[in-house]
Length: 259
Image (cartoon, rainbow, N blue to C red):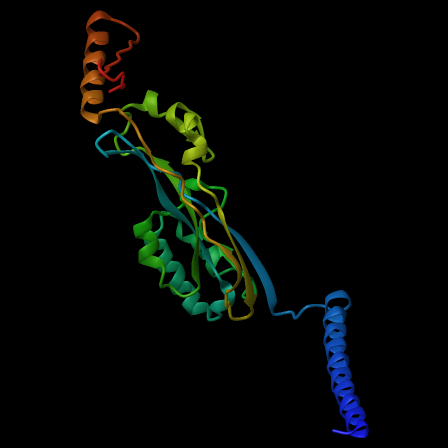
């Protein structure tokens, strides 16, 4: 290749590179103008939600469940997915039969809402007693326009057994007993989802998604059967002798384990 051909090749390379740079600058300028000066598309909405993490379970020495989380759900309706009024009335009837809510309340939240609304709460977000259990959620999940927000409710399958030891939680935080002592272990880490919604159809595009991490389980040295016997005997003795309360501790003398 002679010097003339080499100069021509260099000019072509520079020309092509320059065209790429100009094109890139045009794209950047368009994006900057859209971000700074123009309104995003009217059918684009972002919906962020926290994904709750279940607390860890608490077991006795033999693996019997003493404390656990069960899922509960707030129910919501997406009006922009169902525009036909008659169909909305039928949905309200279905929800009325499935939920423990008055028909007029359900109708207000399904039939009487704006068809352009992103969603309408069916159960009140500030009323945990209106949340529905798993089996109810399963029975209504295929109704058009119905969606859910999940929460966890702390529950104790053995009722009041070992209640003084297990303690309890408030607003998902351990405030007494084992629930408090091992709160940092039992606590999970909440997740996060950021969805881009394209209206009128609701198409959730998970642009960001971090799955929740459940809390760790805790195994106690307690024996469920021994605890039940001890509590029953203590209650009987308190009644016999008129004592307002009492205490009993059952221990393995070889290991010091509290049973």
